[in-house]
Length: 329
Image 1 (cartoon, rainbow, N blue to C red):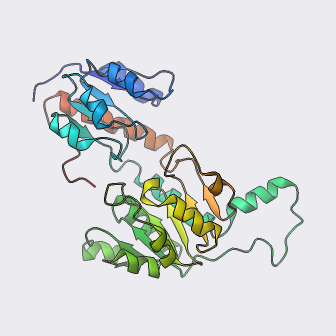
Image 2 (image 1 turned 90 degrees about the vertical axis):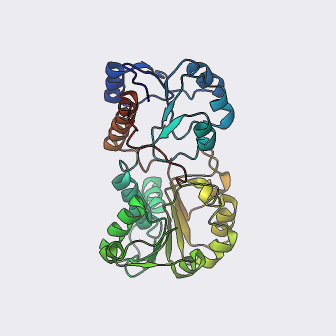
Image 3 (image 1 turned 90 degrees about the horizontal axis):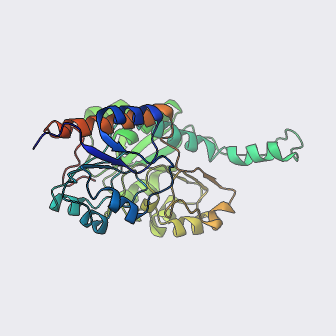
């Protein structure tokens, strides 16, 4: 792999100022100063003579766009962990390396999952709105009744870094941990969080009072949680999703919430972002957040540093530390 002293880098979204300053020092970088989303045509024009593209998880780097890239483009250094927005197969066919930023938002995402696990059954959003409305008439024994989480079963779908971090937090609140994963975790890891493995996702759904989605979006996980599995959860269960909206059939979820076949949901992600279904907006048994699980200053800076490290390693002629390999899920 040839070395490039000062690679030409294109960044699609505004990044933290310290990250942008580092990029200016190290690279010949074109930044998006306005932070307005770049169209496919604008990205294609920008990467016609670029060595590196730095997209975010909301940029559709599909096969057509990659095909329009100039011959210089050899690295897509994604600002974020998920890469379901990038046509990985097409990139590999064109000899373009793709990197991501694993590990930097584990704690932040797990904190948000735990926050939603607490907020939904205890009706925090409803209570906050009532307190602001001027219509609260004081404490009453039967007012704003929610459900206790201690002693309940948390089912985790996807027991990677974030799933394990959620499990550790949930144990502190007295939740029993069950999980489904492509591969069973080593016994030592299971013991650390006292986790029970379910090879069959249907069995996990039947057992769970809370189902936390922590797996990536891939063709295999698209609508993994569908109407049938939502019915397996039952009317006293809750769904929490901080991963990707497409993992859950949102229309089926909305049906279940409207009919009270599901007790509630906490959603940080949506199937058609940034659009949020008006049907979901009308419900009082769902907490809705604007894809903010990783939105901490620390995570954003750490993500930028990962991107920079990947670019520098590649420019020095080495394999980047966070290269997305074939078979990534």
